[in-house]
Image 1: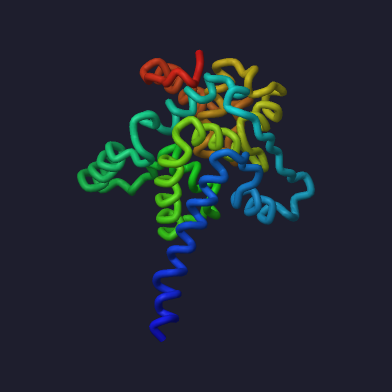
Image 2: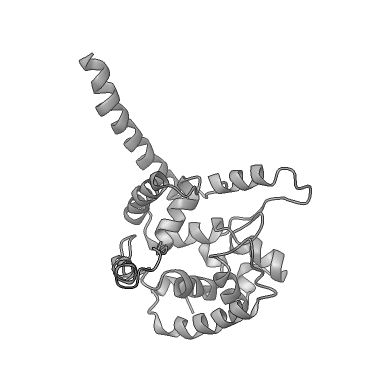
Length: 229
């Protein structure tokens, strides 16, 4: 009996931890060609004859620096400062909730979103959030910011069956991700919260307003040298 408990409560969890760390180490170098979300969407739209998955992995150097800057300005202003979790934003969100009774809003960082896309089924449960937090911690410490951004911009959902900046650039603008104009780059960034309901090539009035906001905010953030100009 003690042997069984040891396996269940010690050896099995330890093995799972070691396997997860090994998987993250492998993906530090190997492109992430497929994610659980891609499979989930394929099943979800299996009866849609027009549905197909569009994705193409490219290195970060083949993505316009404006895309990187716009995504940071839009999704995670303190991406280069935090270690996976934006505690300032969490405190702000909790303060708003306690003082005004507002609904708890999401404040996931790019690291958390990357962890969610690559390692979870993107379900809306506390278990998923816990797994996401665990992997966000791992990729911050094993991958680093540049690799996190590279993976994120290759797997992020940017439309129905569209994943990553390269595929989105080709679909919406008939360009490579390296050829996008500044406005086009920002347009891709602002649809990330609602990729299934937004079209960066035909932005709504709300998205046009967001494009203006993000354009101004991009100048207020200090970017590392590896992003380029």
